[in-house]
Image (cartoon, rainbow, N blue to C red; front, side, top):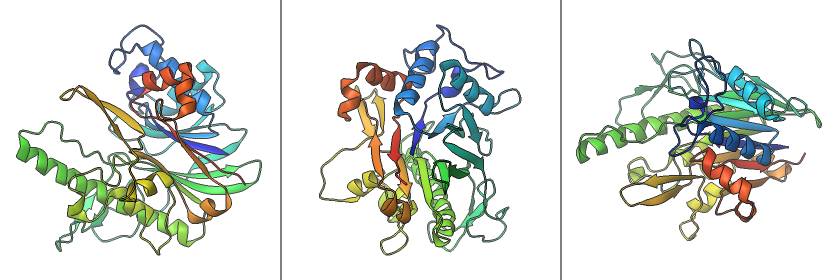
Length: 343
């Protein structure tokens, strides 16, 4: 069984107000990329990754006239993808939904949110993701109330061939971008504020993960964390990164993610990446490790997992396949991360 996460930049912009795919020569929101070319590239990436279940981060919007499920199922039908069924979580106001495309002949998937509904008026452990979370992140004796702009999607998954059940939490945590800042001081303030929100979201996700781990439920937490060990200069203010929080402390029920583990080792010299952004100031591309697939200890020990980052330059198989390499570069500024599980 193969599962994957894939952040598709500006996917929503490939559909009209009625969620119909626009296969034309109009410009996509990707720089110098036509809509037809980006859509074709996305389909090629999904086809070659060949996951039984793939989390789409920044999926098309659900709104007054738009519908995420309709858009993605139409996309799959147009390109003849086997991942023809779609489940989404809670709709949000950002036009970037979290949804899962999957092969209905391989897995059965349902959105199954857990936890008590909370309005943040009192402390609650692991409340439902569409509610509010009261927590003192910076340990100043004053609890704050946090919520997700993109609530994680919680899934119940059955692998039909082996009758195996697992839980998946798909995430897209708070970005630490300082877009719109007025000067260096304002940028620093925004960065710290966004980091605090991002860490609160990761604490919330970790609490939800711990409820499943304590119950012995096989669990996958995956998606775009907008974070990683050493990514932020302000990380030392809060001791650790959001990714480390979700993974768990040593001696606890730690989630397993080898790419994060490599970056946590101060002696390593690798530069792993799941995304690639052009930085105009330096006229260079920045590579960053932002996307992860974390497994519960039981899955890591019994399912012989094999992870892969589908980076067009760092993965030899992707690099030597001209069609796949070009599709990865055209489709998005992120690249898929997959894991194969053998039951």
